[in-house]
Amino acid sequence: MFGWPEVAPVYCDYAATTPVDSEVAAAMHASLVAHEAFANPSSTTHRYGRAASEAVDAATEIVARALGARGEQILWTSGATEADNLAILGAARYSGKGRGHIISSTIEHKAVLDPVKELERDGFEVTWLAPDRDGRISVDQLRTALREDTLLVSLMWVNNELGTINDVAGYAEVLTDHEAIFHVDAAQAFGKVPVRGLPSRVDMASFTGHKFYGPKGVGVLYLGSRSGVNISPLLFGGGQQRGLRPGTLATHQIVGFATAAELAMDRLERDYERLSGLGEQLVEGLLSTDGVSINGPREGRLPWLVNVRVERVHGDALMRGLSPVAVSAGSACNSRDRSPSFVLKALGLSDLEAAASLRFSLGRSTSGEDVDAVLRHFRGVVERCRALAGPLVT
Figure 1: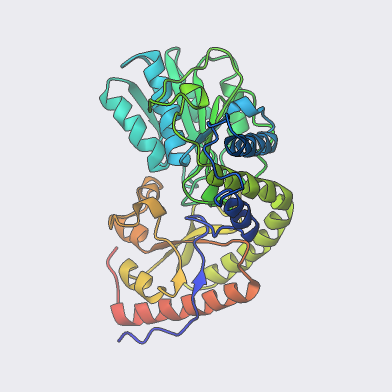
Figure 2: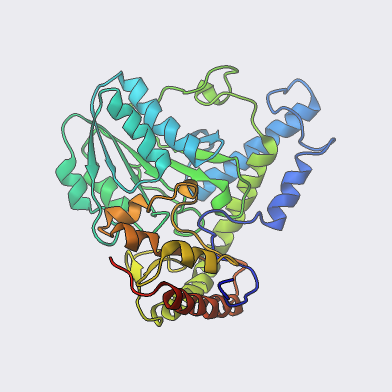
């Protein structure tokens, strides 16, 4: 009834999840069907189990090479959420209840925020670093917050709502002579920025397959080689993966993750160059619309992930009008929560500004024609929303 402009569906929410690459799907299929690597990889007394075990070992080595690590440093999980929880809660539990100081930021993913808050309730003291207007946590902030009793530092590599790239190497340098455990949420980094050869001072890093054209439901916790860094398990039973994360390994998921990782590493420069061009096309088109501005940095972010706010528009009307175009109003994990993005609020935006903000993120299947179509539709929807709504009080 609103007379929204017509547009064919376009997917612009690759930061939320990516489609599974056809090569990944084929590799997974081979690990699901009989007479391939379908068996329990712990059942090494027969050929079927050994085939599955060999598939897991090969996948582990692929991921280890992608990170410049060794196979024993790769711990398979159900995704980055579990990896984050295992890193944070596992490190704290090993140290003892309520012992020590933790540093994190107010705009981490909920998979980091919530376990850190749980530890805060259990008696750990937490310093919450606030971002600048670009959504960045500076090296100096970490240096200032660091204390003698700091047990754990958990800071993300790439912000999932803004695309802001943090200085992980700089954080690592600050921690060179400190015993604090350094955990990095790298879910949005793999396949997008170079991750091979993580700084030696990174003790743990979390990854998930579905952000780089792999399957959902599988992730990795990378464990650094620094002595004295230990975690306690969150799950018990079975003893797999040295007891740190027991349970029957999902061979097909692991093979899918590794195949996607190998493709991502092979395509890293090519994808970055092509998507950067499309991202610039998108940003220029969005900013050419009156009253549109970027939330977060113009530079120093993933070029194809952009969060914009639209002045003089109601957020709900904007989302309804843009419904054929798959975009996000914030983190996909919080999409059912109608409250404004806590990340955008942390940058200083008002409730209305945050509610009238959108995240666009492009991917391998996006074409220049798709971007043009999205921009035409976006301009039409903004004009229509403003005509229907009249002036807004901010």
